[in-house]
Image (cartoon, rainbow over all chains, first blue to last red):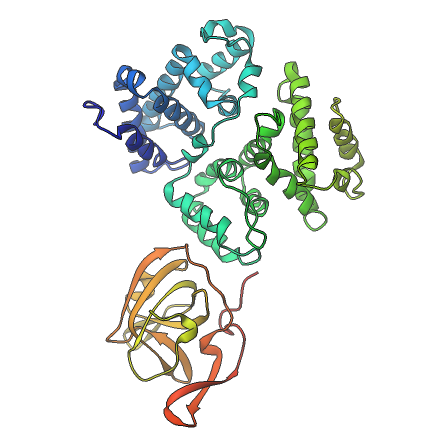
Length: 348
Length: 137
């Protein structure tokens, strides 16, 4: 189909990319990943001419897959696959960086998850120290990438159509309070194998950025995310999930960002008081640590982003006031003080 | 197609309906035949569903099943919905069906209609939800 540029071949490629599963090391899935990366490398020039955006979608998918493929002890198949995925991603990032910028800020989130891979470490280093090398028009600093919101279609790429159907059903038809059985069925189907846990991060991004606000008696997005957070068994998955949840907070700009993308995190923190205080604590603590440490050179940008996020959440009426957190005695005093400083846009 | 709230005990295979499987009990052997009790429901009501033979392994919780020419009748004092020999149970989907657990049609006491003893009418609610599979919150 690619050879003859058949109508709709790009959509077919996207549909196949969605079937390359994260955290699935079965023979069939690894085969599909290998076929797909081979195809993208083989038809590189043709795709670049005809459907360049399908390459950025493949980049998003392979960066996420690499995060898993680089974590397991390698056998011959995974090693070969990994090399090809790295080759594809590095080539696109090095040769066609302006194209990659279409992904927006989550490109950096994904790359940072791969910082232990020398090739990506090099790319991130050049982003920070040597941005001109990427020869992308107007690209002078990584903060430009931070400012670009990632289009929601990228998050959909990591959710299979079946998973999408069930999640949308959960968030449009299931009454708040009746979700227990559905959650068990969902977990049984999609999260049964421990390695599949990594998809939780992708589900969180999908819910925050691709699913609209729910009706009043229906299971709210924040409650689903609370359940997903509780489902994390590995600490690195939990950290990745929290980062995904807060990522749009860090660079929030009310002119370009959507308050709906940051709404679930605040509601999860606020509604967990007082019954699930540990959730409020762990999220608030994570946010404050990230503000301090995520990008020390550009801390001012992040403080501004989070400060804007908080004020927009109040301004738009998502929460009445930040006092529910700042004046909540059961939250540790240090966290509340740091949050208070953030609200007015100062370093913690 | 009937909703579960509309079903009435009768001695004939006349029920066509669709539901989602909420819970399965243990698979037991009755003679040489496998059987398994399940809690199933749709948007209107829940009921106990008796699976027989291959049905016990074919259907899982979360499955949506269409039942044709099935029967809702007493089996050793338990009121159960089952495909029966002439009926057919078929999986038609998964997950995407809303349900309620009250009323449970198997937990209603039915009596013959005084004006027509061939028809059953509900007399009393024995339990709002299944006593075999209590609700999950």
